[in-house]
Image 1 (cartoon, rainbow, N blue to C red):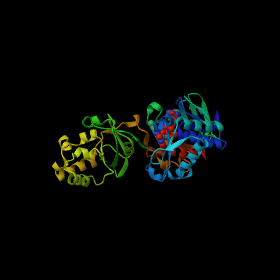
Image 2 (tube, rainbow, N blue to C red):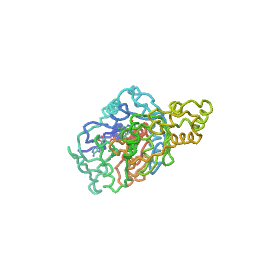
Image 3 (cartoon, rainbow, N blue to C red):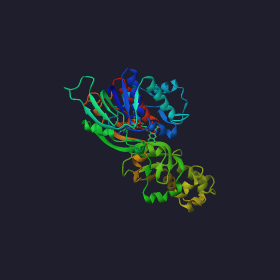
Image 4 (spheres, helix red, strand yellow):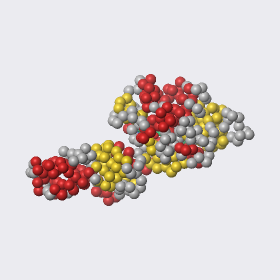
Length: 399
Ligand SMILES: Cc1cc2nc3c(=O)[nH]c(=O)nc-3n(C[C@H](O)[C@H](O)[C@H](O)COP(=O)(O)OP(=O)(O)OC[C@H]3O[C@@H](n4cnc5c(N)ncnc54)[C@H](O)[C@@H]3O)c2cc1C
């Protein structure tokens, strides 16, 4: 069967690209091995899809080539996606830090994408595996016939082939390494991949030490590799999670220590404690600190006798030590939870192999890579969907 464009992957970027190409009158088919489109959209944002962010800028993306994302992000902005959801009267809200979430369910985003697909006659074939991809030799191909694709359902001859297979995170949701394999088969460089936006696992010793904290969430500042985030940490029975930990996980490497300030809004904590000693020496240390942190957490981090002492009984050095323990907690996670729970995959198809304007391979004419399969990884907060929309839109103008 002949088509102009075949997109592999009916996720965020693949559907956006298909819609844009079909708007130009191209005959587009999207193939996916899953039984539903956009499974990651469905599970995103805790079921409410954090679909973009008011403050999108290139600095919020990690890549070996930090300039690569600029063109697409400038041409298809968060305001363009907001205009699309407004057109469908989707109700949404800003949760925090510019993050836009659906008021209702993530499935409303899928409904918008599927309505657009229907409007422009995009075909979608689910439950379909890709069996083989072949680039037609120049003597056997017409200009509009560049690739032969064999699927578990049938064969296609297409002019443009778009790889939108996403990353490796959550394999149970259909993630595979097919996109990376296709790149390698065509001689396109792929950077090593790793799990990002992912919770940390602690050593057995640390797990025991912090076991009673499971479920506690506090606002912290975390720093690693000269990058810091001020958001919440969540203690879990395996280790450390919450937005602050997910954010820093994209920068962390095995062996690194995390520097965590558990009281980031009290830069003068030591002075506050010493002043407390002068003002009201009969107050217990724990009474002062419980205004700042949960009791359970204080019990794990600080000595019980000290906590129960009147502040006047403690030496200034002890108070300085207390401030240091709470404001310079250093912990070395033993690993992350990996692709099993990661929101995204860092690394992937090397940006220098692609045009940043069209996403076409520089080596293979007619072959495009979009979305998370490329070495562009957004921060937590709607940035990864914005990258999927923007890269899908940009390729959709040309495929
Ligand atoms: C739990 C979770 C929550 C998230 N929440 C958010 C959020 O709120 N905001 C945000 O910005 N980002 C979020 N993300 C990240 C975001 O979902 C992804 O970055 C985004 O979906 C990437 O889009 P994509 O089109 O590149 O890939 P995907 O959306 O992953 O789509 C890839 C598609 O390719 C298909 N595919 C894969 N392999 C094959 C194969 N071998 N054959 C055929 N088809 C194949 C898959 O079935 C899938 O449909 C979240 C991710 C997870 C896992």
